Length: 177
Image 1 (tube, rainbow, N blue to C red):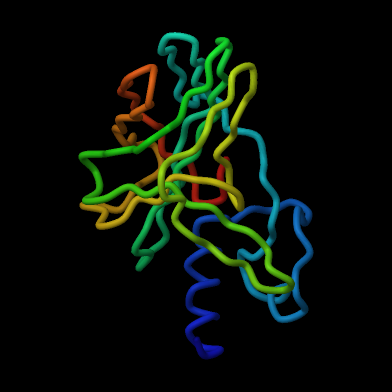
Image 2: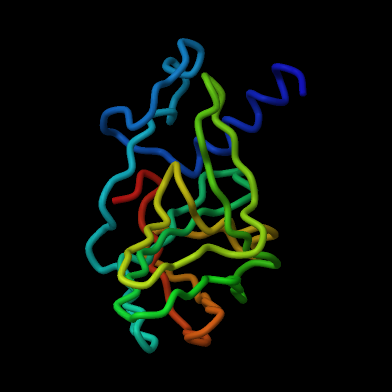
């Protein structure tokens, strides 16, 4: 992958993680000057989607508005497993997108890398798993209409043991508030 391709990938990741606070991860000198490349994971905005499915408490659900020309959207949620058995978020679907993937972002030295999490995300018994900016998140692809602040995005979360739950995730600003 050449430098231009890496820069394009980082710019797409930045569009999903615009924020105004301090750094969560070490940033390279090249990235510090790029707009939107601050790496903080902030708390879910007020009015976030919540739900309950068996022993799973779901909270903090939202998506960010998409910037002009942005080809993908990012979604975030917190899942607490109050039960005694492990579960797994196996997939997410949405009528607002042709495909929703579970993704993970990690710093590898000075390079932010994003990859699909194949096989789902484990939700161990008694723990809380948070999908938030710059970490694990939902990646909406083939978006039918760009997400606009004030709207909502329907999702269906599928869990290995608990089953499925429908939520409407509010669309907040591209900055996440």
